[in-house]
Length: 474
Image (cartoon, rainbow, N blue to C red):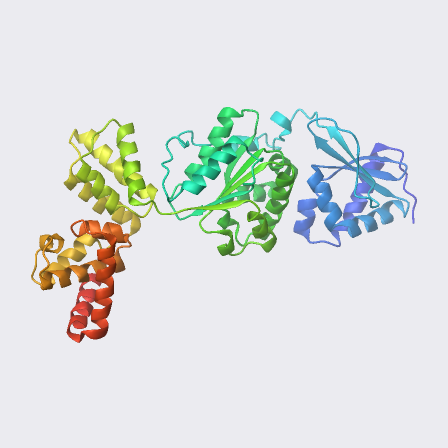
């Protein structure tokens, strides 16, 4: 093999370029771009080629996945006596560490004095954009205005523990899951805001899974993966919203897997949200899902009636308004799917009241629920509609369905209306009972069972129920 001179700095780059040419032939182009383009030749002395990598994580990944390719490339470029060493940029100088004992030799950490680098060693992208500037927390999302209830008590308590001692508790990672509008993002940002307020030296990053993916793609496109890796592996608290959107994105999952490992091993806090528990996440690698289960998984459920009433009270108090008890009760029982929808209805009422200088009435609340809530949820069928159709079908009034009377024909019509309310509206049993004269959930359960029995045992009533179903569905 042709001898390669190692006496000049230019030879350092030539040897590494030769190594890259050799490695490029044996791995996928995208893999090469991710793991080898960010590496730079540093120096060449006595057949020891030193290359500069962004982090120890980067070194460990190369050693764990590309040892054979590197060995063959070094043999070809420098002969069998050739060796490879690494320099890793860190914030402070540290003593030299030994590698894992293979041919790669030693790792030397050097201080990064590059003026392009930002606070605490964060590397700016080549276009001058600091990754950190892309992450903002809504300062309005705090623990103080996060209403606690049975539906979210565990999640809030875990969030408070993490906020007080990020990276120290056993809640690492903290995975919060639940449906749309139940407060996951509010709670995550409350944690971030608390840490930023009381531990100003910690770097807190909040990012959606979609934005994380887009940044990763842009970093690849702009040959700036080094900055991307370096930024995320230096944060103290990483909050990823909606991790379910990493589904099917294999390369993004791979980079997140290694960032996750690096942060977790470094005692940094990881917080994630999802629309379902880890066991139900589809399209994510098993090794990633297993790590999601290392800490604590807590769910946020649909708010119960008491929590919804507390949210309404808090909202109107903050806006210096008074709301009749019957209006609060109506809203709490009529908007029970999620907190975001409830707050939207309250905001609409507040706007109407302040802009028209009109007190909030029960009628105004009903109109708001019909216009705002049902359009958001795409509920074409309301309880009011069901009550109207059923009462007209049996020749009764709507008020009679809500009355305390126990006349058989009214009780039967009421039970059928309750049955259809459960089938079509998605309201809780307790809320359905409220709309039928304030009956409790056990009465609604009994009504549903009774109607099911009717359809099995009473052919005449089954005909009526089928007829009503077709009318309601129109």
